[in-house]
Amino acid sequence: MFDLFIPLAHAATDNVQVTNTGAWHAIATASPIVQLTLLSLAGMSVVSWAIMVQKRKQFKSVIEANAPFEEKFWKAASLEDVHDHLKDFPDSNLASVFRLGYMELKKLAESNLSAPGENEAPNLSGLDNLARALRKAIDLEVARLESRLIFLATVGSVGPFVGLFGTVWGIMSSFQKIGQTGMASLAVVAPGIAEALIATGVGLAAAIPATIAYNHFVSMIKRQELDLNNFSSDFLNLAKRNFFRSH
Image (tube, rainbow, N blue to C red; front, side):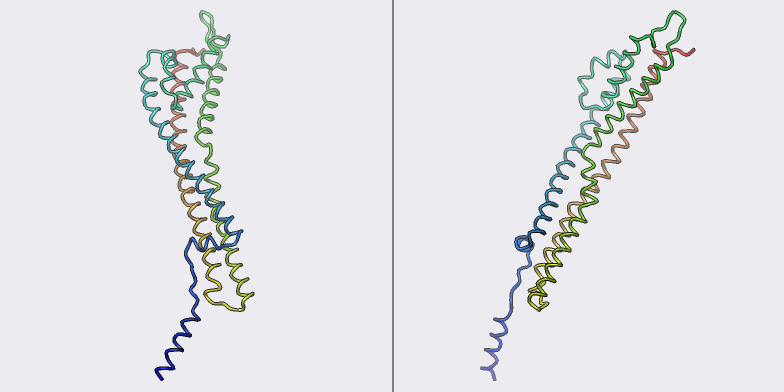
């Protein structure tokens, strides 16, 4: 009885098929469609992280440059003095708004809109022009801060669906192998299931950081826009008191 048990045990062992379900093996043996999907997701993730790093540096430099410029603005003896030192604040978006506002104010001063006679106040439309120039400057700065964020939003919304496409394709491959072999063993379905799950995971790995970063940067832009609007109001009030006289 013992002699018969040994060969049967060896035969059972010989029939066992070891299936490699490691991530790299699953990617290497995946179908071309799934591999292309994973490559697309990897590319989207790399570009997203590059944008995140660049935007973080941009916001950091803007915030660090705004504080000293605002201090200079309120301590300066004149607007000309502030304008002469704008080169010291190349990263400040407040300085950019000031530059366009100052240029518009200077243009008004050289025109008949802001060239009153002895008892004549300047035309109020000149103040409206200044307000529009400041609004345009704010829009330009906000647009500069928003650049490339649309890609993060796209990756955050599309990434999971791209991964889902790879998932569906991997499961379809598993069913095709079942139909071809007539067996539903783990050795048959495991490769397709593995590549399907990897596609899902990569899709989420690309989408989740992009979504978090997008929401974070959008909140920072809102704070920056609030600061720009406050500075614009201060500049407009300062110009109204010093350069425009009411009737």
